[in-house]
View (cartoon, rainbow, N blue to C red):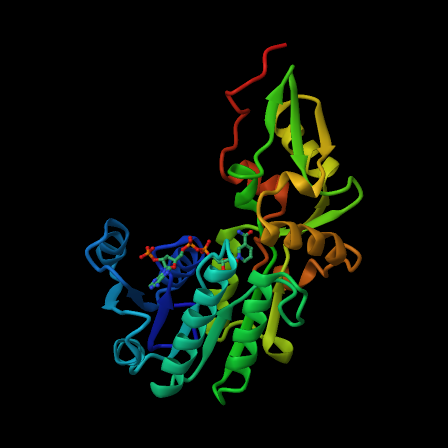
Length: 296
Ligand SMILES: NC(=O)c1ccc[n+]([C@@H]2O[C@H](COP(=O)([O-])OP(=O)(O)OC[C@H]3O[C@@H](n4cnc5c(N)ncnc54)[C@H](OP(=O)(O)O)[C@@H]3O)[C@@H](O)[C@H]2O)c1
């Protein structure tokens, strides 16, 4: 077993993307996992149980349920739910605060908060500043804490930011200037690195790790998909006004500012040598040319 931690590890959000990837990586390494779920009967919770994950029913507004779920665990990983409005940002902070307070009540030996790249500072992006405040709350809690701060998920290029096929070319459109490099990582690798931190097989100097596996401009991202498709590729920079949400506009402005400071891509590979760059991720997910082609 590739772990220095033998006790149970608690995971919040295990039925979601990142928490699910953390569970995958922990189970691969032979760890015992307890998932904190709001609906133990849901299909996703039951699928976890079928893989040997213990389920603990929790309610965010019930501190006793949270502290019970965290009793006797050796480490705890949490992320906070997606926020698409200022009300949801408030809810996100409530979730993070409740989880930290429960970890304090349960004397959890090590808490890993899956935050966001850049949350070491306030940036004016509401759903990033929420994570900054949760980091501060955790930092002041007296608990041993590690922040893992993922950049944009590569999975976005298979959903909301997916390229299209138009007139025989792969076309990618993002609200970012051509020379802005986007920092990114796959959800699989977020899970692997978080698991290494939880199992104490990875160091986090200063109590935090930025999770960046690749850093590419729009034209470079388009070219990576074009190379996979064997087709020419084109990038089109869109204005920020195409984004309906002010939260997203603030986030894309922040992507442009963050691009001024290149990341050290060796950091995550020192922990997980098989970390995927974008071209590898495109192959790993079996990406194929989109079928909703605009006719030539
Ligand atoms: N997208 C990106 O590029 C990116 C990059 C960096 C950081 N982030 C951050 O990542 C976070 C989202 O992570 P994700 O994509 O892994 O989330 P996700 O797939 O949407 O999963 C959310 C998880 O949280 C659980 N959950 C939500 N509200 C809950 C509640 N009140 N009580 C109990 N469980 C609750 C859900 O449980 P159920 O199954 O019961 O719904 C689910 O397991 C956001 O904070 C986002 O800002 C995103």
